Image 1 (cartoon, one colour):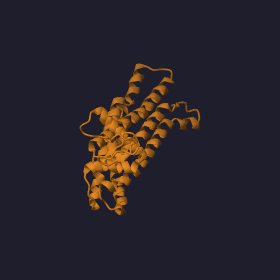
Image 2: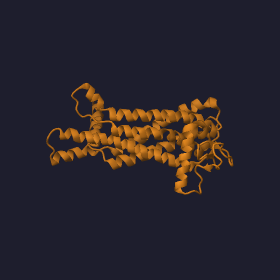
Image 3: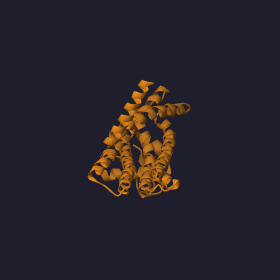
Image 4: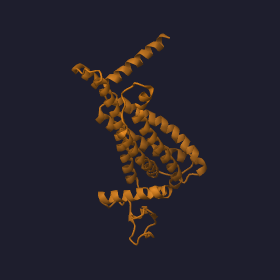
Length: 284
């Protein structure tokens, strides 16, 4: 299992003592440690990863520490759930504010509003599960195409590769959550500029998370050869076909997730539009 210096995060060989300290190195995720020591080890690995992402990433993949990989994927899924919760919360808040601006808020109107508002617990749970599902599909797809192109790997190795993508993405998601919370929500559409600013609490976090995802993909591509033995000349093809398959898989998973989260009134309206569209198609 890979080791990292607990003081500076430098990757070390088995039994090697880091030059920065005379104290022996400790494993970042030994299986016989308690939860506190395990968490400390993960933090040491993250510290090393920030300093040397490719070197540390290759060591992590080589260690095949799939348990730590699953924990990292789980943390990412929870944070994505919180981010989506914040974004959907903006929608619910906007809806309430717009209704309150009318000056009347009867029981009937309240029931109608509740019919188009998202259930926050459902949004959080479904978003987290969907994110974790997609993150677990990625290593399977990469493994499939690596084997097609004569590489040699297994799911645990690729799970560690996928976890590195998440490890890069996690800080960006944290920043996106903070930006989403602190960005003011404008519901006064008295000008085009103010109307555009209404989308800022959604656009800014999404852009930040997308940048983190792109950087994570670069790191992931850099470490794949270390855990697969694939010819680097084939790596662009592996990532290209993986991207296509993952785009389809992500669409299917999140389409299902959105349908599970839709408020009853919105779902009913969409079904009515779909039925009307089918009827128009049959007429023409």
